[in-house]
Image (cartoon, rainbow, N blue to C red):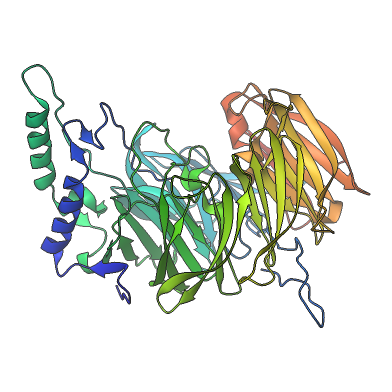
Amino acid sequence: MRLANASLEVADDCDALLESYVDRGLDLVSPYGWGGGAIVMFDARASTTVAGQSTANARVPTTTRATSNESGTNVQEVGVDEPDVVKVAGDLLFRIQDNVLTTHDVAGDEPRQLSSLQLPDLHDGELLLSGDRLVVLGDLGRRHQPTGARILVVDVSRPGTPQVVEETDYSASISAARLHGDVVRVVLDNGLPDLDFRLPHGKFSEDSAERFNRRLVRETTLADWLPTVGDEPAVDCGDVAVPTMETTLGTTTVVTFEPAVVEPVTTAVATTSTASYFSPDRFYLAAGPASFGWWGTPTIDCFETCPGGDGSTELFAFALDGTDTTYVASGTVEGQVRDRWSMDHADGALRVALGATNETGNFSSVVTLRETGTTLTEIGRVDKLGVNEEIKSVRWFDTLAIVVTFRQTDPLYAIDLTDPDEPELMGELKIPGFSEYLHPLGERRLIGVGQDADSRGMTRGAQAALFDVTDLTDPRQLDVVAYPKHSMAGAGIDPRQFTWLPDRRTALTVVSQGWRGRTGWVSVLSLQAGEISNRMVEVEYGDEVAEVRLVPLADGRVVLVTGDAVSFFDLS
């Protein structure tokens, strides 16, 4: 690994690398294990461009930024594909349901299944597609108790007889994955080692427990800290960078390969990430201080549960070029990066939405940073967003940011980023409820999917709202659709359950009676003259509501994928 500043350093050899892990681990161990609580649980899983309009004098902030993808997935960045349970390529549709991969022909009047392939010992699988190679990413081991990650490469050049051509198991979990052209990058996360700590009990005092637990940390090997493939390390000691500042202890590893070749290139940082973001040519890793306690197991890209944090956040920037992932800069920001949607890269600047922590005031901020040599240097900021509120959603455009916060009302903030050195809060809109997911509909409008709420901030059910930001000093809500009481909008948790059909001016989104509720509908939202008309189509029941996808095809049709069927969706 090539390093160029003091924020990261490479150990002299493997012994020195292990010593750095052990020293940092000893600072965290206590009579009660990691972190000092009476009971602490860890999970290996961590926490996910069209040019703006211009005139002769100045650029005007707009909401124009493409998010469609040829593979059928609603993505954060154009040109950067994301994993999903469904992928399309021409007349072929590939679908994975847990550990069964099916191939379908969608050229005719009805989808026709061509093949079914069982993938043993894999759970919660997702797909990336590059040419005639399908990359399958999933958990290894028992359901809800994964022992690592499995990455498969499947040759689908003969759709009727797909074949697994590569299989790699890692002793880590997948926190993110992206496809840049023909290059796959998978982010692996190793948390703190699962050691057989002893707790104080009876005559076994706290001092005895702490001495015992510290001995266990001293006896760890690099296999406890770094991901492995079989009995071999997945990354060389010389490719592991150690932060010189305080960050969460663990290891984040980026595995890069081309599915047609499968010769992995790995690089790692000795910290656990709280969020990671990929632009077309940059990868950013956000790492905060250690946080201990109980939390759920997040899926890839943190769709269900994102880890919290406090204090400051360290940001590490990597340049992407082919299969190279090269560290270029780092910096510190005060505040919390909520998730990958809180970061964006445009015109050489990193833009970050930061939530409040004990290092900040009781408000959120938008900060811009630029690479100055090997340092991410803050160049501009807007503070006092959502005082005493938390960020619910962020959407970035070339020269505009829309930030939604919430406590009792939904302030929607429009921030002009035309000059990254001087970002400016232009206007705000306060309405009941909040948008959890925002999607651009053109230069001046966007749709928000989230929750309705009363004047006390109590949520009542899902809603979809249409916004006009023609005048950034006066953003307006044009129309709103309220869904049944206690309902939830799937796109607020997983944006892959939202599909925008620009030629029809129609949005499709999944609504359920609770995220794991009994009934799921497709909400067909038709937009015309600033108004929304809604048609609800019942499509699924039970836990499989979360698996519903609406996949647009090049011929204008839409494929509906439910728990037990692949069919065409009636748009009429």
